[in-house]
Image 1 (cartoon, helix red, strand yellow):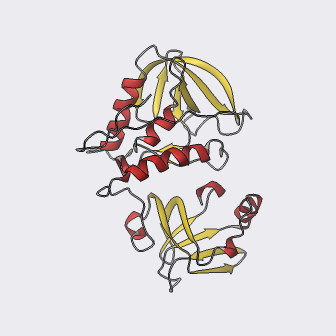
Image 2 (cartoon, helix red, strand yellow):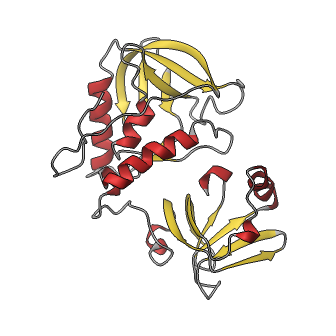
Length: 257
């Protein structure tokens, strides 16, 4: 299946939707779509509200001119018309990452007829970006690969003119209080009160910094990563930016680095 890109004001770009491999998840059931609530949320015929797991649309909470959210909703409406039967995949442990704070189900969705992986579709078209919950790392590598397809093609939120494209340590400040993806070279590492700080400039009081707690350091170690060895290496990180001696991201999941 090779639909066309939903990039704004550009010639359509052929995009191939990846096939998801769900071995790390559990097929928890099937359902029929009633209607699309928004670009991330689906109402099923049995009244279940399902939220697409591990993806984010950057202008989702912008009420006007939310072009990517609107395009994502349109794509879902075209792909999942009322009555479409879908398969639902969720974490194997029932109490781990299956429900959000709004009591909506969380899961990966695949159409039963054509086997279209919905998260992969949105990511590869540049209408969403990866943002997995700390307790739901499944599928992250596959989703990052789909996201890379859109970033390489510079389509959707990855267009050069998009305000949501990947930022640099120098431009990070413009996304304070927002979810952002930042790429840069770590200039120095430091340990303060058991926390590790990855500094991306010469002045730790003003530069962009990644903060890594002792608990997160252990999770990185399980992936063979020692944060203190990252000095002078290029990294990409995603998370919520806050102001603390310059823009700072506290790493929430090992998969976010």
